[in-house]
Each structure stands twice: as structure tokens, then as C-alpha cells.
Image (cartoon, rainbow, N blue to C red; front, side, top):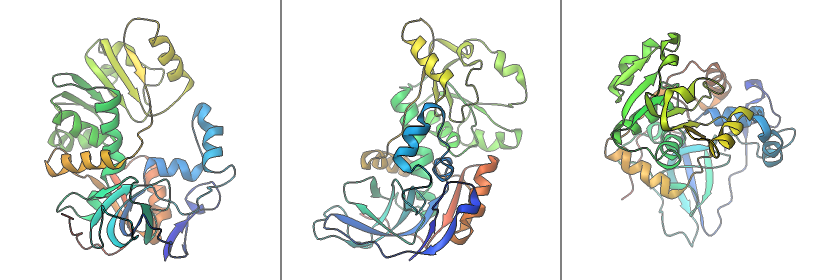
Length: 331
């Protein structure tokens, strides 16, 4: 099978297309013919080995000290089940599935355990649409509903609202009944309002940084306000949620345990079949819809990595791995 591999940490020049052995299918495994797989910000971090702050050494120990321990890149996928182990009960060949793995999704075939983070894809969704959900929508869902405990009627500021996570945060916050303010370039304001934002702001207009106690929750997937004005933006019981770990954030989290006022939080959005089922339900109910920035063929994965590294995209950057035909939604 064809797969994108990387044996040493570095930039897009380290990514190349190669032939790999067909995965062996165990008794409880599911073999998926991958049709679409995104290149996410998380994939970029794994490919460079650039783990932030105190996570650098644990991250390198976990994924490889000098290069990725698992050479086939990619952590999110959508495709069709082509083979199942004799003990598998959840899936049958022909099922449309999507999911998340630690590595190996940028390949024509992917073997995943039946009890892993794999679920039936949303009915009627194209493969590249389903593959856009686990990372962006999954991360937003974990932080807003789980870590942040967002409730209807609360006021939310989404930083980097046109990014791969921010776009879904806007949609999910709006679906929960929150009043959503989106911070993004003016060119994205109309589309963000179409996704549910009630108010849009321009990052270069510094006036928004001077707002006082306006929000109940500030969601910052890009770490733009690390050490910045997030505390004064929040109401007394407000929450600042960041995906980017830093010493400043750790200090703010520690102080929040002993001092009154807004608190800072971070975390890791671990994938699970249960979360994927929740995302499928949201998708089928129309609470979220995919936003695809660009689709690259698998042999242009290095170019896709370069595009993600610019930080200028809007939505998910996708690799077309297999045939682009519509997946059959499993019943």
C-alpha cells in the first residue's frame, strides 16, 4: 500500500510517499480503506517534535527522541471497512467509518481495534467531510462542553475563529445557546456569522483587548492570549481555555486555585468511540457542518504540511487518500 512516512523530525521536506506492507488484521481488528485524512496542527507538531514547554521531554519519549517512532503519519481518517477480524461485532465490510489514531492514517489501509476511537460516519457525509470532524469538532466539543462546562446564555469569545478548531467552536457554542463572539480576519466575518457567530471582531483592532468582564468563557485554541488580557476580559467566574501549554498558563492555573476571579484551564482531548458517536449525532442534527480549506492528493502531503504551517488557512486541510466516491453510511 502507499503511505506517507517520516523517519526524522523536521519540516515538510521530511515527508515522503513510500510503499508499506499491508497491515495484519487481528481477531478484534477492523481494516479500513482510508479515503480522506486531514493534516492537522497536531500532525504538524508530531512531525516536527516541537512539544511546548515542559511537555518536550515527555513528548519525545512518547513519540521518539530523534524521529517519529511510528513512521506513517496521520491521526484522523474516514473510509470504508474492507475486512474485520473473526471476533468483531460492531462493524462489517462496507461500513462507512471515521475515527482517530495515534499514527498511520496517511495510508491507503489502516488497521484499528474494534474498541478504539472508530465509529460509523455521519449518514450522507462525504469522506473528506467526515474526516474533518474528529480533530476540529472533537477538540472544540471536549473543551467547551467538558472542560469549560459551557451553558446556554453564556457569552463566549473564540480566538482564531477561522482555524481548524475555532470554526467548530463557533458552531458548537452557538448550538449550545451561547452568545458567540468570533475573533478573525475581516474576510472571514461573513462566513463566521453564517456558522452562528453573533458578533465578529478584527484581531488588529486592539479595542477588543480593553473590554472588561464581557465574557463568561474565552476559548483560545492558538494560545494568542497567553500572558495577555484574558483575565480582564472575563466575568468574575469566567473560564479561559487554552490548548497551548506554557509556564505562564501553568502559573495562572495554580494561582486560580487559591485566588478569586477567573480561572485558566487546559487539557488533552482524547479520542473515543463515545465522543465520535456524539459528534456524529451533532453532525446529523445539523449542529455542525464541515469547513474544508483545501484538499490535496496524498502524494502532495508535503505541500499540505507547508500550507498548514503558514497558519493562514480557513478550516481543515485534507488529504485525499483513496477514491473520492461517497461512503455508504452504515445502519
